[in-house]
Length: 531
Ligand SMILES: [Cu+2]
Image (cartoon, rainbow, N blue to C red; front, side, top):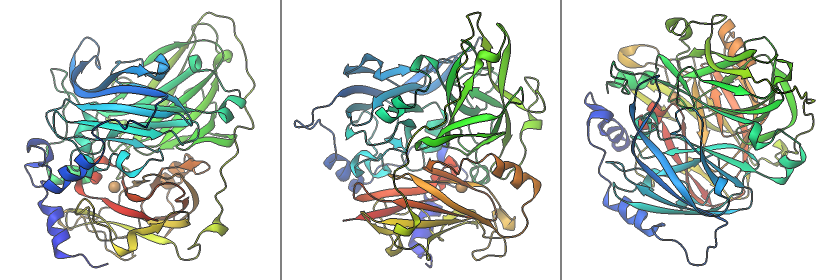
């Protein structure tokens, strides 16, 4: 586990100096990358007969994010070539965030074209996917390039998403607007009798910073800023500030998604009612659970059931958020415009319409989980340990940063068909191994949302060195450790064990911190699923 000099130098030299990610042109693709990309899908496979076929572009555009102002963005847009016309739509709000909606078992083909001035590639976050379709940065296509995605939707009904994944440019590309929601429906979900699509409320939460002309402002490019992660004074919901929506007086299904680069949200209802949680990253829970708060790290999703029939016509209820930086600085008090409510920021307001109230009983039994048992793990007593650390201006996983596109260490190989326990350890600098020195010797203790590609896992345990303070207790109370997950927020001092099964697909996939600035700095590694 020692750091090879080459890897370390690669990480430091890869454009993260003071002039930075934002100002420097995109890293030119290596010849080897081109060869791999070319070998992958650039044309449709004749034998693949899609149920749904889409065209998807990434291109510069504009959006109405702030009242009365037009903001330059990068956005996904497209059209349906084959299949249900509702397979592609756009969220309300600014209208620049697309939603792909498919059924489990359907074959999907997406003709993707890169009309950005730099390389990009699309990752389908949370979905089980053949390696060449997963959007690994080795498949990044240059400006003007095309990529044909073909895969069978093999996930449970749930709220997934898609975003760019080119190495060192993910943060800025997502920030400029490249985000999409990917919704899967299935028969099990239909049996649970949840609110219909007409009563779904997808809510994408993203914080942003604007200049006086209403244009997006990202980080300066200083290394320290990337260590801290982006934070913005405005919270956009579905691309707009002060999101407000009229709703009918009946049950609704919220699909809440933290699409920010780094900021954490802790959500609650303004009227004090508990949140009825029905799903997480990997789809529906077995049974609905209620909790007072909901904590979402970047990339995490939660589905919340709510019945608005108790509201009088015209009455409103809001979703409130306390916001935190990954260093667990409480950001909410810094941003008192618009006015705080109950010491929290208002991220969405729902106003009841004047239709008749139609109360609906809360759902109870929702789904059956796929079998995922600790006794099946090949390493139940000796978890694969992933040590996070921040020191010498570097963010590392087991003392490594992302290296060559196809680099896999001996301890990063798993066997297809097996179940494993992984332990994400965020205890460096807490007296544990690895140290915790950040910039210039400053101690860096940050919460890292850890994401693994091509798998949905179960959270087994959280343990902590030392006493949990009040903030840790409060954030922990909002966790969604009950469901199937593809991101788990690991607080400073914690060791989180997860159980996952590599049942489908072989090849190189990624695990990484989902603070996008950390990912771009190389807090990301390949792992290989071997036959
Ligand atoms: Cu991180």
